[in-house]
Length: 266
Image 1 (cartoon, one colour):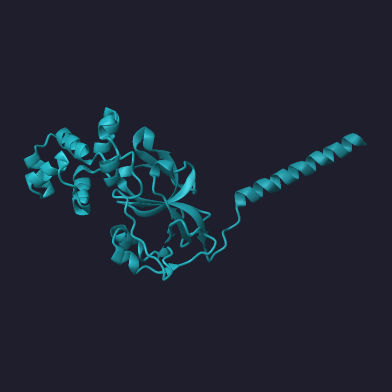
Image 2 (cartoon, rainbow, N blue to C red; image 1 turned 180 degrees about the vertical axis):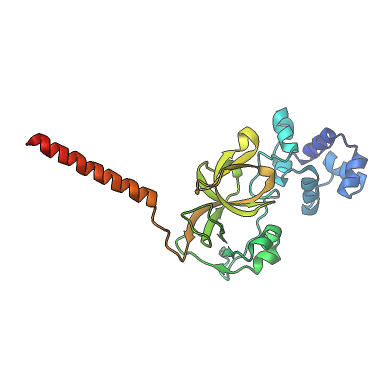
């Protein structure tokens, strides 16, 4: 564990005395001193206080030797680009289980999406969401289903239900794959991601619909990421007219080539 060294390092980089930091953390200076000297061990509430104060994930505070990071990595960390982020800032996922202690798939429909942006970490909120099972999915993984809106991901239609697998380590998000993303500003969005965490601490979000331009989003603006696994829709997607037209043109071209060959063989 590197907790005591890390909180001391971060405090000094902020230019704060123990008195100033303790005041902001709403704890006694002697308590903070005990944590920094290793004579006292923090409970979960204290860990959450330090995480929120420094803007650093709990796992990072505890498991990562921050003194071994480069100045650029530390600077990114302090600006909110936690390169060791796994899931939410605190890496805590509120979830529900059935009577057999197996994970449910919670459903976040269109009406619930606004509330989910605020209650995603509240077990009492998650508990009231509808739940169901998809027997072909792994029991060892965590899934959640979201109802999408809009036409940015056509041919997946407005109102479709998209199921995602919870992503714990955002560093392993695969570029050019689809994900459901809970953001601080835009709520739940469904996009194809381009992973730029190592380069700039950001993701680039792409739509399947070419009418929508891609845009960047810092990891500090993201709360959860779910890897797309399937979707359910009550409507059949429209035929791809451009593709059908292209196939028809190719067919006509082949017929013309065949007619020319027949004439040449006469």
